[in-house]
Image 1: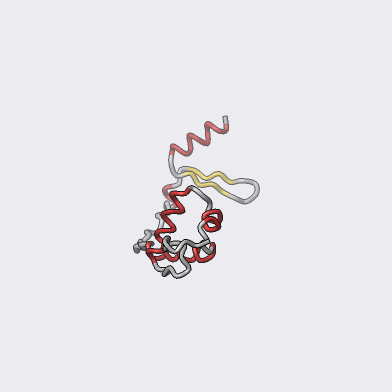
Image 2 (image 1 turned 90 degrees about the vertical axis):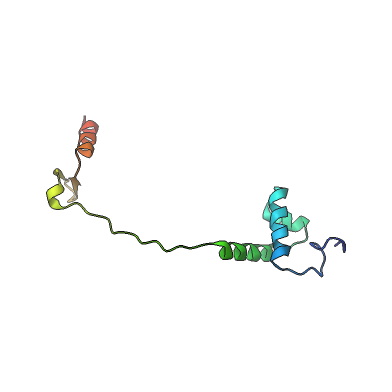
Length: 106
């Protein structure tokens, strides 16, 4: 039964940010799964999820990022090219990679 002295469980409680933040904090402290917490605290599971997603949407700070295109090596930078029977080719651009390939070949 709902206790009138506990506003978090009162049917007259106002479901605002502070109401839900209180439940989020209690949920984390309880160590219970969301469904178990909601069941034990008479909280609607779906409303809990709605307000939780609303919280994270409002807390997400997006920043603009400019990505530079990858610099592709010029054909003149190729040390060697391995051509395979299936039509694929592998262009080697560094001596380090070339030495790894030789090590793998035995």
